[in-house]
Length: 247
Image 1 (cartoon, helix red, strand yellow):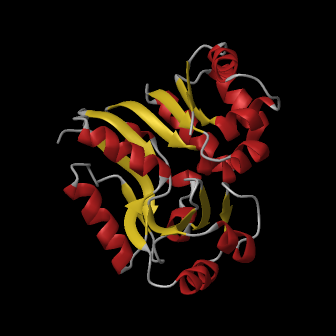
Image 2 (spheres, rainbow, N blue to C red):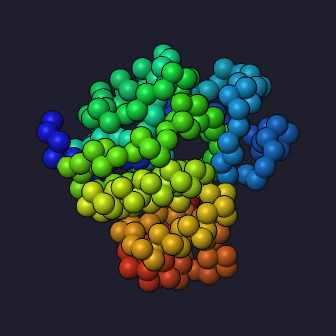
């Protein structure tokens, strides 16, 4: 594959997903924080919750931007990914899965750390409450992000979780724009929005081609209750495409 052949690059945390269906009672008894959100935790916290759940868990490569990137791959787009994986067996499995699905794995960075993973606790109503240990993914440094990572790429899709590291998030969007990429951002979580509202509005004013938000995230962004079409129209008023997702 040549350096000028990518339709899309995903940018984010390449983490292994651990999926479990749990009851509302389990969530209330064992998980602090708001239902439906995402909180960063230590790997030991994930291990403790998995031990309480038992054997009924599924493991699959994931990460918000990576999932979107592989979805685009399955639709026939030529894709690559920017993020940092570890040096353990989980990292090797992650990289192998990504490339086997048709994605280009040449732009992953490497760290001598365990790969990140995310525990998604799914309640009977379909809501996901996530607890994430970023592992190697969290060590991606702004200085490692270069124009070469975006060379020959038409569109960059960035996950909102990068906003937990605002310097990194700013370097990514600035470099993608400098490389001539169009840009989409998925807000990822209402906790992300609550923390980074000013930065998000700054990006919207500078120009974001597509912004994705679910019902909780768009409510947190505009801090008011209204209809979904009103949310979408207000968001589109910044000049890009507004994608308001409904659960």
